[in-house]
Figure 1: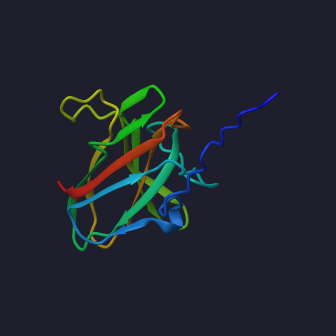
Figure 2: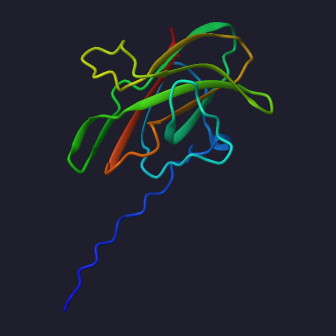
Length: 158
């Protein structure tokens, strides 16, 4: 009798998987694309008021002056198994001074053209000199059978 063993590939966590390793955004507009398979939810990570998140990554930005900001996941895609389509995302924005304070969040933006409303979009008035942390993740706790979860994250002045 022979047995065929198929190994499931292990995916490394993205560099910005944890809050302490947030990708620093130094100028606007900023566009990022990354495969978030392997991302985790770290212990003590905040839970947004919008929805439960899984497989999160982090970004941070400190504006030099007061400005309106817009962050979105337009163009995020997932593939794997029988699924090919939009990557269902959630964005939450926080400040941090020893504890997280949520500024805003979004799940299922209705502002993206031709969308099934699975991408996210937040806009808010930012205060110059304040660091904002962007927690971006999948809706709920896992990405199912995805083999590629290509997160598109854009931060720009609104």
